[in-house]
Image (cartoon, rainbow, N blue to C red; front, side):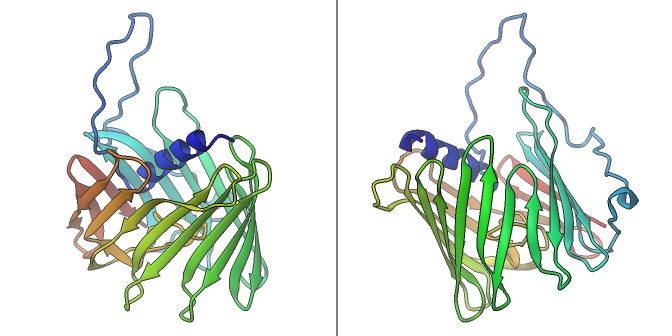
Length: 280
């Protein structure tokens, strides 16, 4: 796997994860025999939920139901969440809106008799390994892009993950993420290092910093250090994304929020980008 290809793939994934589509592409006229890009108004579309009983899911009041990402007024991503009777995530369905694909992905979570997550089936497949009440290792398989990887997690004394090391055994690359936290447990920073050419040298590729949070509880697993788990306890007020090996991609975002009558966050906005939140 070439270093440039891997970095650009990681860069694209991070832009989606952080809701960072802030640069507008120049419009390009299309030939008449080509279909125009798909544009979906999030206020006009109904995304039906899968019947809960068909997958053994239950409705639990207050838990996340659906998330929609909007850029310049157009829906670009949606995700739905389904739960077991004990409140653990059972299934997640999601779609990236683009003119090339109508694929709806589905991740299904499997647990042992003690309620520990042991397997995830989906676009990426995971097997999880536990020690002393924590996930310390995962085996990931992505048949489309990355093949097989082993992932290792390290924790601090408070039980928070502080390092995620991925070793890809098919394309011979490594990636390391370091995490720091505020005293109240909110995520403070993510620093990404990569050895994408098999040289054995880790290079600092990007840093994400959250300078402060508001007091709203965030139940949505938007930022996942461990699949299915939410990496942020509250909603952030600011975010800074710095690319240390490329220019022109740095981002500085300040978020504003809207709430429902129960005081729950239903909208997060930065510029022309919005995320809409729905609850059971």
